[in-house]
Structure formats: structure tokens, C-alpha cells
Length: 298
Image (cartoon, rainbow, N blue to C red; front, side, top):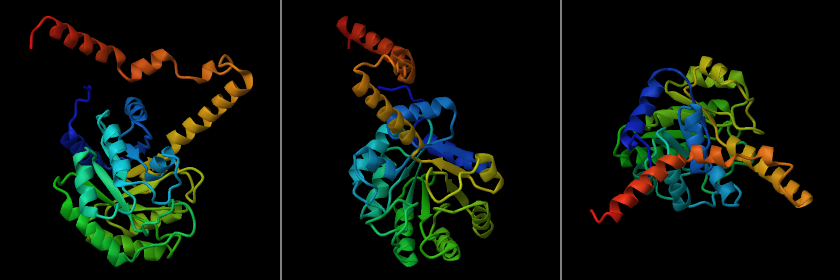
């Protein structure tokens, strides 16, 4: 029971249409379904599900410990509460790219991205990453493209080669990923405007920029990225970081003070929460169903 008007095919088609408009799509990360509803209400273009955020939410570091089931179940929960297209980080493909693509197509997301690290991966903005060969990554991309059934379901190829092999070899890798069928390229951990500009100059495809905090990339305004020719910008961990800092602050205050009175103004009100989860709509529908059933009709 939910009130999302658009089905999966419509959301994927919306994603394709938005990309063709040549206006950058702003895409925050959602660590849970409620955040996805807020992202839509504010007016963003899509929702992002970060593999690192999923690991963190489960209490794990982002080193390849999450499973296909972990990420696909949460992605399904997030995608179904919003009319926005959902982009999901599938890390290195969860062993079988074919199975992974089949699962994520079924859960209702619009796009996934796969990266060229080894399975014991690291966050894209950490050092000491290890890559698979470009040839192996090309084969993974080809397997992903072959496995998908909906032409509007997009395969995004992420390269972590910038800080391992250098930017020029990363660009060469990305060219081979495009040839393999990736329509969107995610060049991870670029440092500054010059690097973003160089990648745009060298690659003829849609490009995704990652504006994660505390990483290797300079945090650029979305308009700057748009002017540089980027099509998508993600803010993968921002919502989780905002939430956890404030949760920690509040819990420490309650522990110290013995009550919540000093931090009530930091909390979302019951009314605001009920507005966001569409309480009245659900309640009215529930009453309608209950009354209908109680009359003895089927």
C-alpha cells in the first residue's frame, strides 16, 4: 500500500529524458526510505543508494562485506516509496554480474554502477586500492549489458584508476568501458576543475561526478560541474553524515542531562514526520478498507 504514481518503467524513462536535457541531475544519497521521500519532496532529480552507506548502516566498514541481498533489499525499499529514479552502487558486482543485474532490474531501480576494483574493495576516496585489469572490467560490463532486459535500465561504469594508475590511464580504461556498452562513466576521486574538465574533453558519454565530503575531490557547486559538462552529481553520504552527527549530539545530551528538553528544537516534530510519511492518506485508505470489509462486502 503506497501512493507512488510512477511505475518502474516510467521512472527509468524519466531518468533517460532528464539526461537528454543537458541539465545536471542533482542526486543525494538516501540511507533509508524516509530520506528518499524527503529528497523527492525537496525537488531533487533522483535518489542514490551508496554501497558505503549501506555498509555503514549495517555497522560495517566499506570493504566489500555487504551481500547482494543486503543492498538489493534496501534498494527495493527505497525505490518503491519515491517517484524519482533510483541509482544504486553495486560495488564490484557481487560475484555474478548477470545475477546482480537481474535482481536489481526486478527491484525497480533505474541504474546501477559497477567499479573496477578487486572484490575486497575500498572506499573510492581512500588510498591503497587494487584494481582488476581493464580487460576483466570490460568483460564485467559486457555481462551486465547483456543481462539487462529494459533498454532504459542504465549501466554506469566507475573507474577508481585515477589514484592508482594516473588520470591518463584512467581515461583509457573509461574509453574501453564505453566501447563495452557503458553509457555513463563515473570517474572516481578526481581532484579539481582541471581534472574534471580533462575527462569531459576526452570522453564522449554521460558523466557522473561524486561530491562526497572529506575525500580527494574539491567540492564544486553543481552549476560549475554543469558548466564543465557533467550530467549527474551525487552526494552519496551527506544525509547519513548529517543524521549521525545530530543523533550523536542528541544522545550525548540526553545521557548528560537526563532529559530531552534542551534538544527538542533539534528534533523533527511528530507533525512533520506524519506529513512526510503521508499519514492522513494512509489512515483514510485504511479506514475505507476497514469500513468496507466490516459491512460484509468483498
